[in-house]
Image 1 (cartoon, one colour):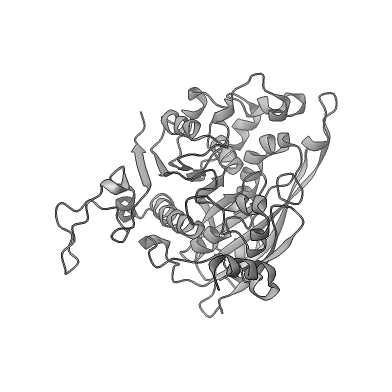
Image 2: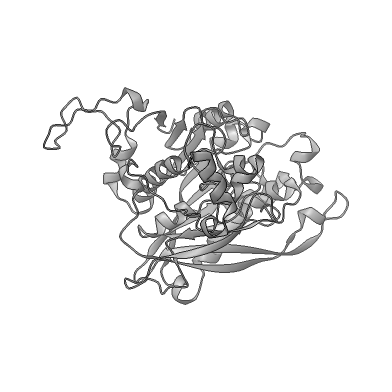
Length: 419
């Protein structure tokens, strides 16, 4: 059977299609992509932001208010005797087709003893809380509580006016941090939110930059990029809501393909106000958030140490989305929401898991040894492999730490100190 015939069979078969594994680690994955030693659990929780602005039903003349219910998938280290394995039911990009995803986390498992740093995970527009479940499960196995958010008006099945995402995204992130920090019960007992990380993809990256201090620019924009009643001015430099959501517990931010600089939502002044350690991940030919605009974010976040990981020739789907579910292969437009034309999804997921692990371990756990994984030759292909037969690195060895020989290809990693 040829490859295309196999793909067609998988897409058509309910038995094969329902597997859709999200936790694959390739044999050539970088070192820190491997799952940790801890079994993992998962629980679905709902938190309510009471009586907030309802952007979708507001106009310039009448601002509506309503409760905003936010569903969160919480991944966490589980008790040592936990049997691994579980499934998730999620919508595809079309917002109608339900698929089954297979992971390692056990539903409602008892948590491990101890206290674990919190990492928030925030999807794009549209997306859902499962889009980066591969990363959430991976982090949980390494001693983190990962809270992956469904943002109302922004998921595959409830897309609303874009203005709601522009206004609510950083506020949702702030609210979920507060909710997880004050959580009762056995899960609340293991959450350490005093040093919290945030991983945001696309519009999740937009929100993460605002949440970490980057006030947006006031100004005239096309109607699609506004919210009623001049609401976005609340998130501008000096805005009331921007000030309210600033949080000293936020200690590390990963922004993947962050949207907004391509539409002049920030200037250098706003971006320079971020003082949280920042890692930006981007595809070198991103035409949604636009790679040149993402580079501007990297250049203009002068108030903090920041890194830029670039996947050469990748587009907007670089690193973040899980592998396309088998059911998506039947529709090229749906498949394209998850996949990249050049890079393999699992490969990109593994590279992201590696770098996020190093970055979060360094900044949330104080594991200084992980800094070596972030001190790299800028172009991966310029690294020299010089390792003796006994595994000892020779003085001229400059290959990317953690990457097996011949595997650090098509990647760039840049670092800048505060200026």
